[in-house]
Image 1 (cartoon, rainbow, N blue to C red):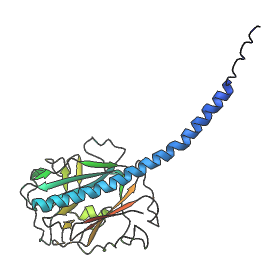
Image 2 (spheres, one colour; image 1 turned 90 degrees about the vertical axis):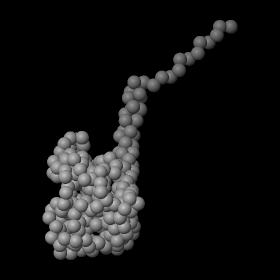
Image 3 (cartoon, helix red, strand yellow; image 1 turned 90 degrees about the horizontal axis):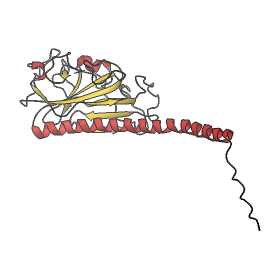
Image 4 (tube, helix red, strand yellow; image 1 turned 180 degrees about the horizontal axis):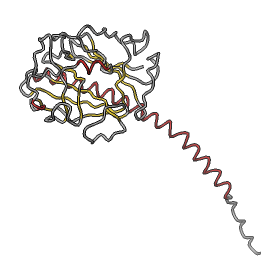
Amino acid sequence: MQAIPPKPGKAFTLIELLVVIAIMIILVALVIPSFTGIKTGSDFTKAAYDIQGTLDQARAYAMGGNTYVWVGFAEEDVTYNSSKTPQVQGVGRVAVAVITSCDGTRGYDATNSNLANPAWSNYNNGKNFVALCKLQYFENVHLADFGSSPPVNGNMARPAIPDPQSGFPNFRLGNSSTSANCVTPFDWPLGAALNSGQYSFKTVINFDPQGVARIQGASNTDTVPQYMEIDLQPTHGNSVPAVPTNQNTGNQAAIQINGMTGATHIYRP
């Protein structure tokens, strides 16, 4: 008996294959933005907690070493290569540097009611300081200013920031008056003259041997602020979203520093 040859299997036509490939491309295009958003949110959260951790370590070093520590903040244009010198002031890249005094002294007379800007008595192009860690910078992060009145409800209902008093630096680091009033600027890398380094830090938080946190102004005569606040928003390149009316929604963070204790607390929606 003659064997019957098997029937050839049915294959996909070219059109069917093209349709399947097109569907796969559409699905990938829909999924990628979701993963990108998740990664962006994760990176921003990590940046906020890393900055908080840096502040906590600076305070611990000041207290443990019975010395003074300065934490500088600068925001640069994220579209500009981070390795170039000098950096370009702008939006989207927040740089943080931590330095300490070589001799354990403050380096200026904090009781002077009319400090010059800068107030350093012997800056010596930064040679009287030593870096405590390498430069840190956070991409796609903006130093925002959420204002002095916090939301009423939710996790962003943080304690109110006191309004700036006459001659005091502003307590919100994203406010332009903060850098204008801060009299303890420094440049990075250390050894560079002021305003001639790769990064120029004009907004600087100081921790003293007791852990007290300050932003030294020209005429605040060593007064301890109630709070300081670092408001953060994620950016898309150098594009910054508007500060939401209800700060308990969206993706932002507020790091608050108690002036008297130097303790930090982070607030998220």
